[in-house]
Amino acid sequence: MGEQKLDERKLNIIKVGVIKTEKENIVKSGSTNDIVESIRKLIERVVDGKC
Image (cartoon, rainbow, N blue to C red; front, side, top):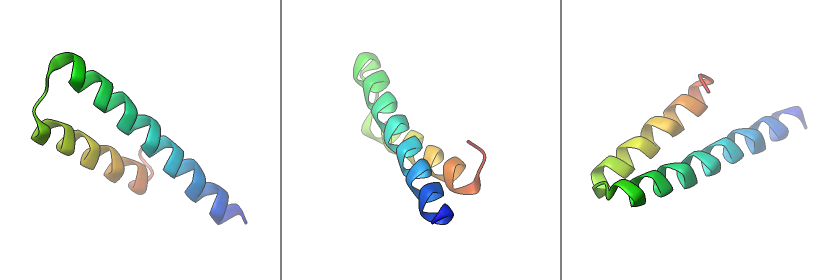
């Protein structure tokens, strides 16, 4: 059960990060590649436990 909680926590961190990235890039009118790259880096950090 602890493993499932950890996975839910990581998923929630990713969800919040994606929403923040989308909001920031909408305000800045960022390119799609910038948004995708930011989200990819966020997911890598969360999965690696650096977040």
